[in-house]
Length: 260
Image 1 (cartoon, rainbow, N blue to C red):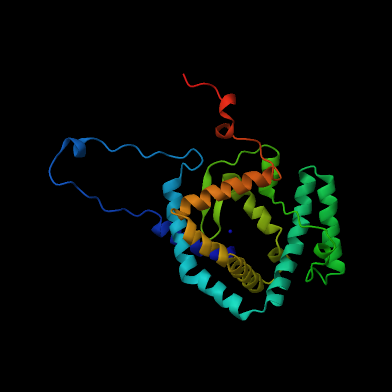
Image 2: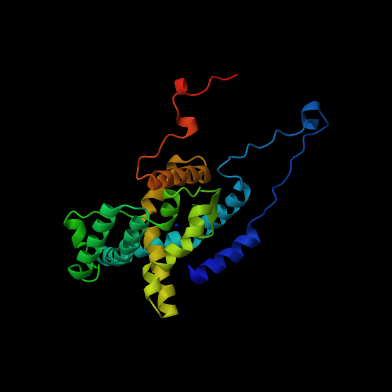
């Protein structure tokens, strides 16, 4: 799900995005071999699947070689109380941005609750190091600018896999720079410190996904399709606050037009 890392990732992705597979030929001309191959069905939500799969493969290689080993070492060495405090501080700044997005979406109650959450954690939680508001029952309601755009009818656009960031779509990918500008790293003036915090944030998030990735390896026949479909479903539910309207294919059979 960052500065210099993004540049490196883009360079590597461009270099290895398009690979040509070998072609096998049947021995001797036959009617079957002479017939043209059936066209590959393209998903309407994923028209750039070939490119996306190349970036997905690049991300998987980086994860296996770098991120996953670092995440396992981080989880083994860093005490949970330290990593939890780090996550709380980042989350407190994220809560402020969530409050802005709730306001932009016209949700006054959620806006007030998130403002209260930030105020409580910033004062009584030592700048967000402790999640006092969560213990008091003020739950986190995360919103980002991609959800805000979706709230006001901006379509998702095609599915898109971004280098290192991973699953996205045109709408959320366009909103991502603004979300990053409102993150904790934007408050750090020193560029070296900013890169270090970004790297630690990336490793911390990957450490939190170690169990999920292990389960994914066991249940997914095609990791790319599983991640894509899960992301699209999760983002659609997020835009509609967990209660999305039925898609055309989800309508009951008696409400769909009879086939001609």
